Amino acid sequence: MKLKLLTLENFRACGRLDLELGSRLTVLLGNNGSGKTSVLDGIAIGLGAVLTHLPSVSGITFRKQGDIRQQHNLLAPYTRVGLEMSSGLRWDRIQRRDKSQATAKAIPPATGLKALESYLDETVLDPLIAGQKFQLPMMAYYGVSRAVLEVPLRRKNFPKTHTRFEALSQALAAQSSFKSAFIWFYNKENEEHRLQKEQRSFEVTLPELDAVRLAIGIIFPDISNPRIELSPLRFAVTINGETLDLMQLSDGYKTLLGLVIDLSMRMGLANPHLADPLSAEAIVMVDEVDLHLHPSWQQRVMADLLRTFPRTQFILTTHSPFVVEALNNLVDDTLLAYFNQINVLYDRMRDIEWDRRND
Image (tube, rainbow, N blue to C red; front, side):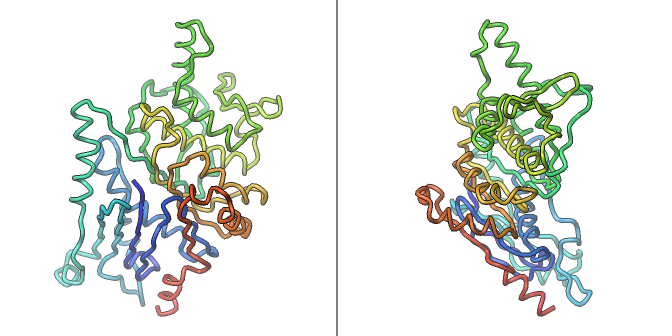
């Protein structure tokens, strides 16, 4: 799945916004308060309809009246999020102000969810019931709270097994938790150790774990041997021969490493049948991609993510001049055709600001 077009109507401060999305990268530039995060939240609400239709997964939706645009202390009759995929598949979600007839008359004809649900039935649910192979659509949203990593202190009540649909659990909640990735890594390491013991070979590895290790190695070449240690319970890595707890790393290291581990874990869990899970299609949103990163790292973070996840569509926000400078480097990069289309919503996001001036 790849997004092509986002439409927001009466969404928070936005009267109307039609935004074309790059097939590989979209970067939203703007100062704090310009509405960048609201765009990501709108996409997450639209994609929430995908999760809601799948088993054992709950998607996010509107915050009742909290997402409806307010002008002069009056709420608009409705708010709408519409999405269109590169395949032409379209759907929308609408939140009404109330159930009155006046509100109903003010709402334009809706696209609805039938086409989306039919697509998911055909590509996911029907093959699942028939016991056939299928590719689970992958999506994730990383908000600014990703800087706060939650690591369990004890192994009590750790689940022993993981289903494919767990890859989408809380995937669109911007307040993502590292705890699930930690538990998954712990269980997979135990499974890998059992296989190595049974086959009497340390060469035996799990493809899902290898995918996480590979992603870490590409973006963090100085990090090796990511692992769970038991006493004390922690996620440990080796940097220049020294063992360090993940929680001991700098905020920039910790924030980006947590994102890479979580995303690669989800991709491996979602589609374990793939030889290269990191190359599966995915839609990933990252708010303030420059969060806590050193300026030199801000300049390369986009290229690192694009290379590590070669078929992922990234939608990022930033107000960092170093990230903006890196966009020019991407345009000059010999991999430009590989990166494909790069869309940038410049400066203050004119549609939203125009509406504010006319409030």
